[in-house]
Amino acid sequence: MRVITFGTFDVFHVGHVNILERARSFGTELYVGVSSDQLNYSKKNRYPIYSEEDRRHIISALACVDYVFSEESLELKAEYIKKYEADILVMGDDWQGKFDYLSDLCQVKYLPRTPSVSTTEIIEVVRHSQPKQST
Image (tube, rainbow, N blue to C red; front, side, top):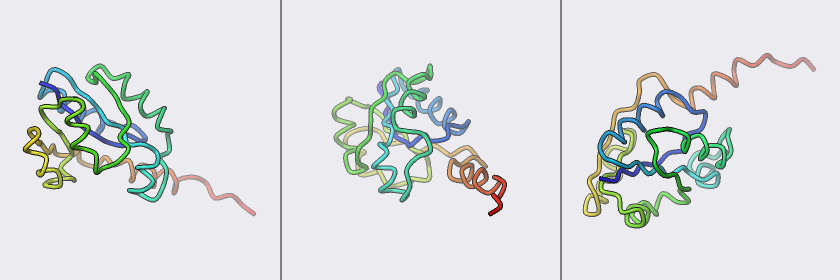
């Protein structure tokens, strides 16, 4: 069974490892769509800290991941599922219900996020912990 999942995977952390390992446990192959820089900007109004190329490299280096591709649009999930012949779509539960419409193409599973771990929060902590420069 082929599993597919998607994410930005910026400032890689244990929550990312957890969801990817759990996603892989549902099948024999894991395909991962890494959000393009432009898609991330359109969703969050900021570019990722790490480039799309670097994020794809990080994800492809993981033993639980079999194939990595760029996700160019949230609206293309059905096309990616068909193209890569996915049997199961796995997403974090922060997307609960948003992809149920794809259940005619594949099984849709929402997994709980790792508590107390968020890329956005990590970025904010780093930004606010940097010493202020005197003028």
